[in-house]
Image: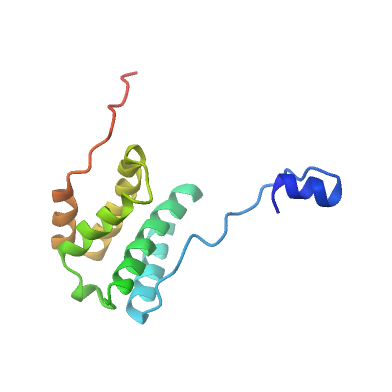
Length: 136
């Protein structure tokens, strides 16, 4: 329930912290569901912040679901073009200024898969930060 809804329904503003819903669609094929679970275990052992874990998981699952929607149910059937097509599909959902952030969360998953060809395709995409970091 939103802050506004809590006020309208109960006459009180509810400012409690709520967990975001689910983290997006999940892959359904056995191989991809197992890969997603293994990635979550791997990330859990890294001591990352919860928000980072969620972001890494969300982009990895998005790629796996993207593959499934394209008729691919095994990682062995995915090629470098799938990575480039996935990145291109993000352009419609993310502002160009945010794309670097999303992409930087995707690369660790590709490395985790052990597929050098997918990492190479990712590197070919050449997604760059839209503005340089301001020197401290």
